[in-house]
Length: 104
Image (tube, rainbow, N blue to C red; front, side, top):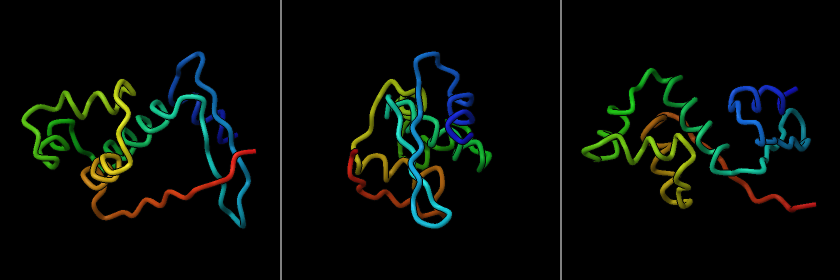
């Protein structure tokens, strides 16, 4: 069900999500397009916090919200360091944990 929910939120015909069971109540999510999955994460976190694109751009020290908006649209793929800074800008009170997982 989580794959269907994420795919519905993204609403792109070719976008597909894979869900892998983890330990306990945890699971992992992968997708055939990581830029789109990252875009969803950034957009949902910004909206959850009630921030505008302009407010996030200001937090990042940018003069225009266009650069940040490209990440939310999946048109730009951030490096790991940049993704960390983007997540800190939209959700400074949260920790996001990315872990390495073996591919099947």
